[in-house]
Length: 260
Length: 325
Image (cartoon, rainbow over all chains, first blue to last red; front, top):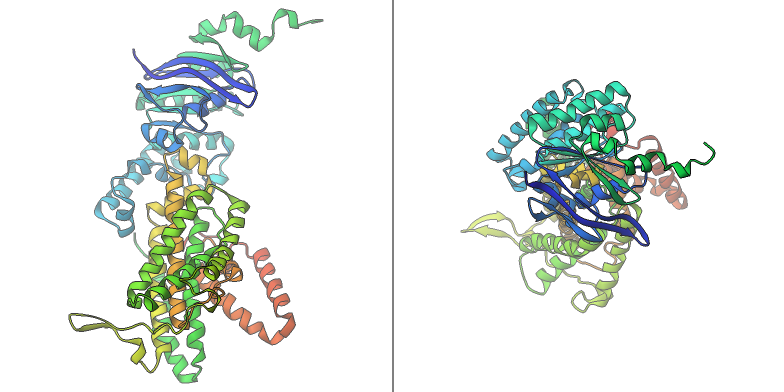
């Protein structure tokens, strides 16, 4: 299968600090790929570069052969590569449903002026957005909290709201930033199933950054491991679990364990 | 979208009050000076509407005086030096203010919070100084003796009467200002409740998230700032026409601050907040005139109290912590 997203020799330097060094890997269509690594390994920076929230120092990211790095975030989002954030990044004083409706604006057929004057297309858009929002929230099991203000939601729901907002844009690729952080086992398993159904039923390719190893091993088709900004391994969950470099990065090498 | 009966009644009562009630009342009491006061309130409310709109994308705008002054000068210059009709100079003033807003907004709208506020605070002073320096604005002498708006007729049918031939220009100006204000707020209401308004809200709450869902935040910021300044230009141009003169001091930094306070006082969550805010602030200041040297002290203490106890503005008393009316 040809690669949907190609990360080619991407490097990011902040002054003298190298956050990502010469990272390359491919993401295939319809796969779930996780990027893991210890704290400070450069996972989030990599995501920011893929979604053009920060420019690369060198190297490039391609989507279907087209460069998507070093652009503006909204341009990349319009191409269908959409990132989610950790739970604090939401539209606080909108309800769940309002957030999902506003996130669909890219699908609008009427112009902004059409909305102002209330044209027929605009009215059709508004109806369609509402219907799709209801459908999406039902799919995500969020119908009951549709009219809650985002600021009143508990953490677990906020994460789901982030995914709902991302999905509402009708993405081809969804980049999830730590979707399981701070969740207990049951919540994590629900979220794992949800992310999987996003891929299976909506045909969305998913990339995620995550710390929760059991969840990552469970959900991922392939895993990319970063350590100190370098890619140290890439492969299926079972390959990664048996990779010596990965074990070393996570547990420290035998030499480090002096006195243990 | 549908309106509730209550809303329609409220709007009906308001329109009736300003277009029929006020003139009747003034006729009965003979307080003709109130026309000028209320006309000013209506025009300041138009400029405040613009400030309110910049709040809606999460920017504190203390520079509306700059655009009001630009509008006033553009209209005055077009009428006096080019001999154009005031009714053409009015939209031209708005558009020119909008154009300047695009040029200024492109660099400064990247700033957020207090940094944006500080830059806009300087703008009014910059425009005042520019007006003092440029030959076309006639320096400190300003432009005076601006003719009153002439009549407009199409195919011999008079649309707008000649203000110069009128006995009672106060009433005419009052009605014009009220019509402009109603149109401004109707447009503002539509805008806020249309898709552009929803995108603004998303930006106000989280610009990062907004751009992640594909909102071109830089573009929308500039568009909103231009519309905001358009309102400022219109308000300023009308003001100049009523005063029949424009000076560099017609709008100063204090006016810019007042435009902002009008929005705070009325309530940032309510489209019609600035109207109430302008009315209360304008009259409040005058009512406290009796206090002499303590006027400013009492005035500011009241303002602080309002902001402390009614952070959502005066309209929150009536509507609770609700959203846009």
